[in-house]
Length: 178
Image (cartoon, rainbow, N blue to C red; front, side, top):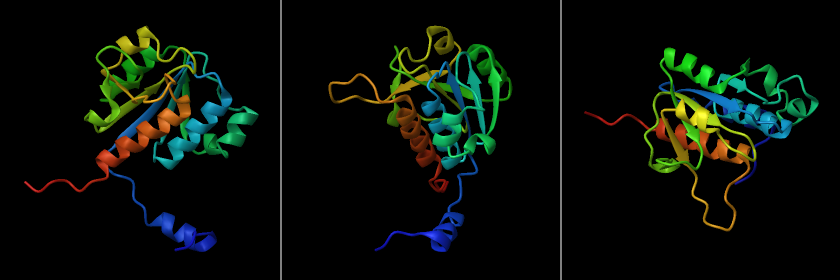
């Protein structure tokens, strides 16, 4: 076994297909740190997410750290700014999306025990305060990542990556024969 590089890596990456039954949007609510925002753009690109909505006090492109950390993915992923996350979620609901927040909240389900909708708005909150109660009230549900150590949470972009790839794994399976 050896690491793929150059042409071999590019050929391999072209063989990977995104699940066509999944339409996922990232909604970033009040994510201030441009490093987390840049990471979110990079995760979006890696996970086949074609649209992000930045809300509230979220740092928006152009920003040098977003560009550097995101490796320019902010130019590839379509993004828009909406001042209020609840308003953005209402608009997404009108488009047929269901909103699931990644947040430790009442009635939240463990992230790997949730059935995610095929049109999903995955909502992430502020680095310190998380998803606000107002935004949670506009969501259809919430999931949490179990924390087995002393810490109460992971870095927000790490949580986004874990959540997004879990959703992908749920949709990357062959449909069951009926």
